[in-house]
Length: 80
Image (cartoon, rainbow, N blue to C red; front, side):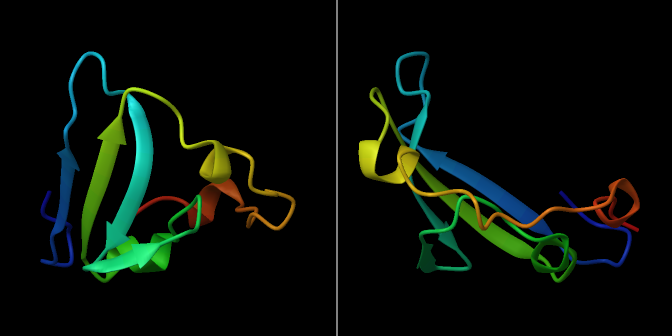
């Protein structure tokens, strides 16, 4: 999608299908990401998101401690 600032966010989901509904991995701008979230700033700069999808959840990814996940106020989660 093209953002109001002229930058672009591209989302690809390799192996996505009716059966492959679970995220098995993510590359953000070509780099593997272990995080379970993206920041608004990362998206505002423009981004390429490459998801690897599978038929079963990645238990290591799903079982990760999420207590350190960032918390956003509603006004900080909107794109300009």
